[in-house]
Image 1 (cartoon, rainbow, N blue to C red):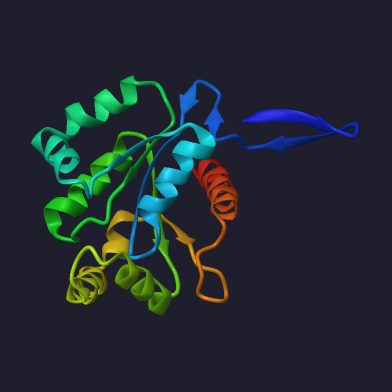
Image 2 (image 1 turned 90 degrees about the vertical axis):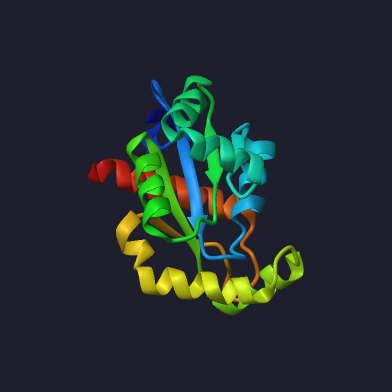
Length: 182
């Protein structure tokens, strides 16, 4: 938490790098919600290190020894973001929860499902049936309730992605509120 003076009055402003604590985020959520794209924004605009667990080599490194992976990432001492559209099976839900236990704020990107489907289709890297399968798994497994993330709607009222800076501001507010509750 940083204190800044503006026009003679004091206001408290949450900064993405808290005193003696480097922010670490896990961004997960529905397919097509812009998780990886936002992770890249954090790299370019805010100097984060980004690890995308949808990359098969990165994922293999993670699942080989999750504790070592997380400790190594934490030891880098930089702002870090992991993006991962995980399969909501018991093993992977437990991995998400362990990431949270290692100091990562867990964010769930969600919102306009039709817009997410369109983004998924535009990406074209996997069959559309996988979108529906993943959505079914998310809904039937109660993933959201099991991992207790902060929900971020990555879409605006027109079904388009929000500006990354607006999402960043929303995340900062949500993290500030959650740190007060802890």
